[in-house]
Image (cartoon, rainbow, N blue to C red):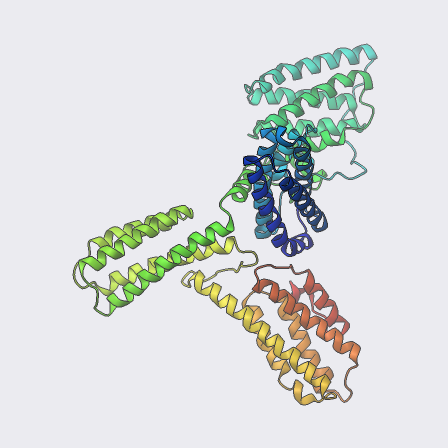
Length: 558
């Protein structure tokens, strides 16, 4: 999973990265149509190298490999000129699209699964004629591998070992053929898993036993519904070669770390299973892996409509909502109660229903369609209850659209506990509160500056504790307990160590106080710009108030 610090770095570099990716995509499109202009490719290579460098600085696994691979592929296309293969441009186009979507997904989800980039990475590597990366590439194994599970080792003579390995391999290959032909079923994977168990018995407690234990867990996962793809078929073939080598090495030697990681990854794709659970626990994957169903769902989210598209369509819905609500307001006063006005409103509701389908809000779309049909039946003055029912339905749509926009807006998450309140109104309240909180902090900072400029005139600080407490209330409403606790400590410091003290603190303490207030302000500023920098900056503020003698309790900061 991606660290908060990486996400904060991404928020800083993403505008520049997006601009570079857009420019590269435009240059490649132009070059495909007019291959006699190689100067465009030079700009693409330079731009992609800048993107790769920025992603390395942000420490984003997956994105680094994809950008570096596309940089190499662009140089290859530049060298080949007009003779560059269409597959090269297909890989570049897919890579650019996936990389942009991935960065947006990462910024929104605040966590990422770099495995989702493997298809695009391997498409680029195939165009470069480089070996493909295995599915376990992003699983980081410890330098010292754990001991193999306890199992009774078979004591065999060389002749017995050869005979047993031949039987094990025959058992494995019988099912392998069916798997390679896409004809395998649960019994086939059970047989292959049994072959791995027997290979583990040959190895005993030696390191290679770890590989066969993980391989058996991978076949357990396949029995539980994990699908077979080209990469997993390649894994089956590699395991067959390992079985063949078993007769020569007698289970001695170290396991292939890449092969072991691939087996662990496949095993972790299943939701449950005794051996699968133990493998996840052994390699620390209990809470840092997704099942195959979850992974596919996340991939669909990543490749779905981008945030800018959703926001544009949402604006269209908001305009329709505003028009309908304005018409309803007029109707409630006894005007526009004719069939022509009702027909126009029904048409607006029907258009809104179609737009909501584009946003994937099917329930809201269906509700609007029903209300459109109902409005067409209206005639003469409308009862207040009918108008109220339609207004409630419009508020539900408004909340659904606002919730969708929130999901594609970084840092806009806010829990909703009262379903009677429009999410749109809560979003407006959130924006207002963040802005007011920042204004309160600006007042406090100006008061501290005036205090210093006036040779410590305490009159300038008289209202600062009250101002900070008002900001504390706003942050508490927003669910920002850490920020609220920090400002509460700052307020207490000013009351005790400055307003009620005979001797004023030195410049060092005042700078530390300023660090605490400014850190909270920076955090709020990032939320205001929808580019959250993460709560790491609040740690600086917590250290500052602790240094001032007013530490924040862990319970307060949670």
